[in-house]
Every structure is written in C-alpha cells, then in structure tokens.
Image 1 (spheres, helix red, strand yellow):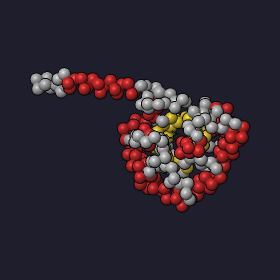
Image 2 (image 1 turned 180 degrees about the vertical axis):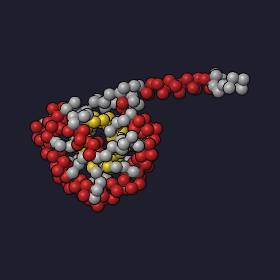
Image 3 (image 1 turned 90 degrees about the horizontal axis):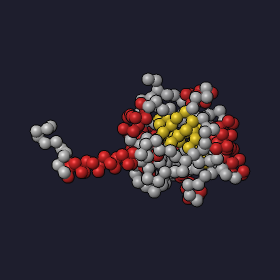
Image 4 (image 1 turned 120 degrees about the vertical axis):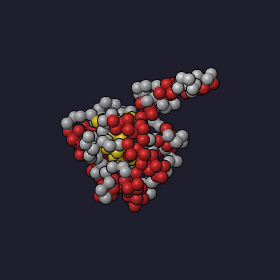
Amino acid sequence: MAKIQIHHFVQSKQARRRLVALTAADYTIAQLLDRSEIDLVLVGDSLAMTALGYANTLPLTLDELIHHCAAVERAVERAFLVADLPFLTYQVSREQALYSAGRLLKEAGAAAVKLEGGYPAMAETVAALVEAGIPVMGHIGLTPQAVHQMGGFRQQGTTREAADRLLHEAKDLQQAGIFALVLEHIPADLARSISEQLVVPTFGIGAGEGCDGQILVTHDLLGLTERMPPFAKSYVNLREIVAEAIAQFCDEVRTGQFPLGDRES
Ligand code: KIV
C-alpha cells in the first residue's frame, strides 16, 4: 500500500480522476477512512465543534489541534494527511505561520497544512511556508474562521465583484504554491470556473460538482452532527443508531439481561 505523495493531486486532476477527502479527529475514524482508500484526510479545525463542543472554530488552540492530529497520524498509513492551522496561529506574521505549521509537521506528523483566506498577505504567507518545504492547501469562499466578518455561515461569491475577487484569490494562492484548494459554499458555476482555470485541484464543499474533488466533514457524512450545514449529506443516521444502542444497553442493565449470568457466560 503506497503512501500518497503530493504530486498525486495534480496528476489526478490531469487524469480527470475525482479526488475524495474527509475529516478525522480521532484514531478509530482515521483508520476507517484510511482503509477506505480516500486520497486525503484532513484534521480540520471543525473538530472544535464536532469533538470539543465549542460554538465555532475560533477558540481552538494549536496544542488541541496537534493532540488530535497526532492520534489521526497513528492511524493513517496511506492517505495524505493535512492539518488545519487554527485561528490566529498564522495570521499575525509569517514567522508565526512558519512556527505553527512547523509544529504540525514535527509534533503531529502532518504532511501539509491548510489555511483560510486569500487576500494578498495570505499568498505571501503561503509562499513562505512552501519555501520552507511545507506543503499548503488553501481554503477560500466560506472561511469559518472569519464567521463574524462574514455575518454568519453564508454563501460567498454571490455578487459579480465577490466572484471576481475569489477567482483572483485562487490564482494568487496557486501562484504562491498551494497544492490544492478548498472551495467552500460558493455558487456552483463560480466553483467550476475557478476549477477550470487552475492547474491545482479544487476540493468543493457546498460548491457543486464542477470541482476536481469533494471534501466533507465526516460527522456530517455519518449523521452525527446535530445541525447539518445545508450543503452536507449524511449517508447514515448514526445519531439515531447510537442512541438506540445506548437505550438498549440501559434497558438490559436495568432489567438484568446484561451482563449474562454465570450459567450463560
Ligand atoms: O475544518 C474543516 O472541517 C474544514 C472543511 C473544509 C472540511 O475545513
């Protein structure tokens, strides 16, 4: 089982092979994802909500992300492992970004980092990271770390001006050296147009089918999320299944059906 390397992503786009990425925050889920032969596992900062119960991604610390990424890394043998840079661990200066990204590679075993935003300063940060040998995945459109700036988790790129800006940001980030780009919650025709104009692959999430691949939060896919984003799809309702299993266990303990008595065990 060969480990996926960075050139796999551009090669897949060239071969028109759709890419698949999912998030993981713990060893067990990461193992299941890796064995499903997906291309990329993201230790996304959405774990702030799904694993840690924060209201949004802003409070997550670099130490918390590293803790989860190290657990995921122990399970991932094949997929390309990307770790999110949490809010305010890379925006302050290029030195801060280098230090934070370096810790994700050194201490948590990530192969690459993902950061949000595409304004000119972010492209410079990307270039500095890439120059230091750290692969970077970009993320534009709905960028949850800017939730307050955006006035909520709204679709982005809906005006002509905003769409043009996103296209420029995508090209700037590519120029700076990203190996792939997440396009979150933007109109499908805009995502298709950006994807067609880039050499590096795009991963859409709420961005239609014109992207080169798709990325989803695994908690959403499994139906574990209480309030699903409008663009996500759950393939199973694990909330219901788990709740039923727990209720059955409670019932069996209370009625003496579990554990089995000496005679039966
Ligand atoms: O943190 C996250 O889960 C993300 C999504 C794009 C999958 O960034």
